[in-house]
Image (cartoon, rainbow, N blue to C red):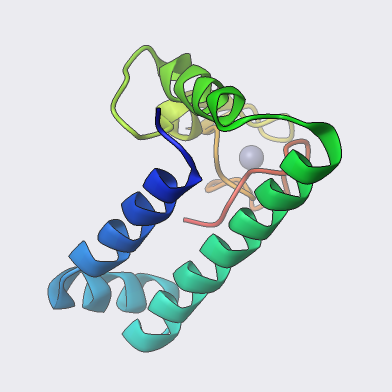
Length: 123
Ligand SMILES: [Zn+2]
């Protein structure tokens, strides 16, 4: 059974696999140093782990429930590939009507803020 230990191992392997070129690219794109970018990933991982452990303790949800939800989210874009490509599906800006990517926090064309989805992120 895939448990939280497996997810921890996956996250640790993912962090370890970020090579120096990827880290430099991430830092250049985000304006962060590679070290800070990696620290942010590690911090984010710990927050997610803490949230999951609290949720499991308080609700009785199991690792099987977590695994099923991860698989369901992964499949929302039609592919079981460990990525959520729904963030890159084209959509229309409500302000200017131009086509933008669904995961953006602001319109590329007019700059209007898009705040109707808590999981949007800067690109
Ligand atoms: Zn716009």
